[in-house]
Length: 493
Image 1: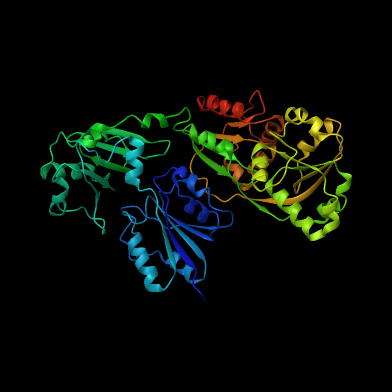
Image 2: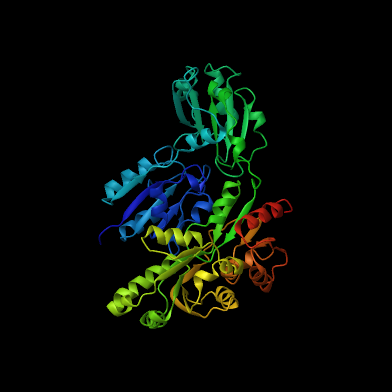
């Protein structure tokens, strides 16, 4: 069998916004993702639906390693599958990526290395500490706090770290923090040398503890040694600039689950992340062909009967143009003059594809539709939407006195895979379909006791039908009001 391919991918320091474009593309396309334990749930939530998840990482103290590349990764690559080996930070900086690459080369399996933002660079930037500075540090050394076999280093291997004035960054030093700092002092570094302990860098729970080689261990004594952390030593620590404070937004320390009913990036999730929330998204959604194209094809054969075609997703537009080409010139010759997009993001996507739009309606609520009533008249309208339709959108259009025919052009498949681990502080329901997609599945059982913020009456009603007791509805059915309500609700949980 022809072997597959393994991608040694750096996941960066934790914040999904710091992933490379290549990393995101691979997470959305490969069949298997084998990940470290420290890879954040927010990053795992970017993996395409249907991909196999393999937690193959290990932490110090979990026993000796008897392999270079995890056997499960090797087996799947030999079976012809495309596998991402997702590693915290950069795969070639204390990530054992070199050993894995050696094994792949010896096995004759193609591989690619996708670099990531090193944990050292992420921690330094998040803490506002320059690793080099013209006035005090012209070099920086990355070092591990323990040997490859898990044992602590002897002092003879650390002599070069204590020499000079350069910056030292210690990886994996938390379990032996006091011993590591003591040995630097014993080697000649002054106990008054500035030092920083950076915990969960770039993540909402990020913490920066400042001190010196002499007192940093005491200052960091209350920190969970299981939390990912690095130590930065040198005069550069005294040059710290207060950039880290800008990350402490109003949702810092809060874990928010955004319910999804459609694929693609979520504007709501992005806004909440900018406010320092740790955002998870579920369920995972995949767009695919409808059960049947019969109703869409029948409507396209009668395009002359409609004055406007409404598109609520790029998938609908793609299906329409594919089916028009399939049906031939008759359908093309009777295409309506006006195509209207529902939603700014949909309009921007369609416009970027060269589709001429008569208008882009910014939202799907009744008020937004009413503002574009003259564009939609006289009707009838052809609403191209997903399988199962959008009954609330159709009802709001009909409330304006418009005649609407709704046809399915695509469908969404929801995968409630368990990438959401640990407690969640708040659940956000952007729509009734998102509420149903989350709460109707097995995944929803774990969250029905969690406070929720629901946009719109129908979203609130859907949540309550599933037994959710604590539901807050924003005063307006728009994203800014939703985000404001999330901030308010987060202060009460």
